[in-house]
Length: 253
Image (cartoon, rainbow, N blue to C red; front, side):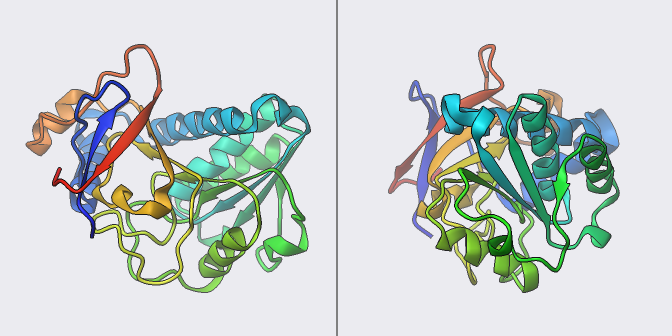
């Protein structure tokens, strides 16, 4: 992996985490301090929708957005973003899920809400190319920081399709297929235009496939980082919920 460090737009260092540390951040929040997983997913999805609206500019009312969602928390965040995009007037939001029958409990709840809001959910056995056409933006919420091995099956199909079309890609937390600790792709991986990462940057975002970077606040209290033994984590968003993130290659974090 090419080493790098991260800063905010003012040049202030922003420490990074590996997959194991981020997993423990989630555990401490969910089991000890809050916020719970529903709250974090809602915060992630709302921020992802705002990032999508920024990428679409003034065209969002007439835009077609395709969301590619996995079965875990990353996919749930993408599904949540779809609802927020519809609420803000995006004309056409099309959702593909790798396996809608295997969604985690929290992600399945978000899918129920999305459907109740009138969202378009494509059948699991229909490939994105069969319904999408050109479109305006792809949201990659297939696999987050917990990648285990090379993407397979429908996840791999979605990634390969997203890379094959000339449409900007917004990835949630990590480009799907990129290891959040090493930055390596063990198989196929999304080449993102922008990645909006959650809570703290991951070391793997050094990978060029991550594109431009944003850091999003999902409500993790600083006490979580203290209990993790990483009080250096946690940035001041200065009244914002999303902030630009810069990478500098060639130095260790």
